[in-house]
Length: 126
Image (tube, rainbow, N blue to C red; front, top):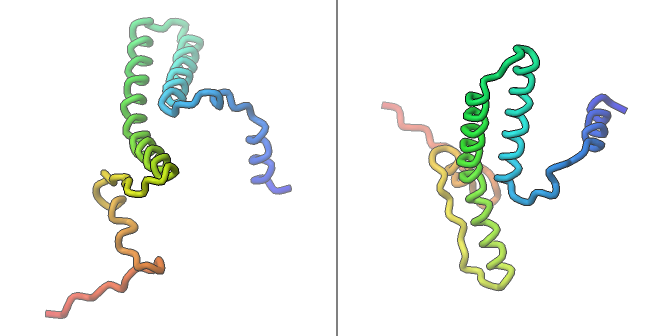
């Protein structure tokens, strides 16, 4: 058994305590609060004192930041879920809007139907 297989097998045995939580935003919030509390507990253990107001403000700011970022990440998932449900009901006119900008949006638009990239034309020599 290779090292990679052993690591994968060990990771599969780990508990998954957030499985009952359905909301990805709530899961992210729990992870942020738990990791922040762990870091603050470590500082308290090593330093021996922790300013309670600073700790509370740090956890609240981290939680608010994670919720704002999670909202942006889950909006496309909610749109895709709603469109998939409408397709399951037989309504095929639904669309999922793409609001990305820059390279990520253009990534698949230059492909030909068979998946190949079109050949680039070289500019004419002056």
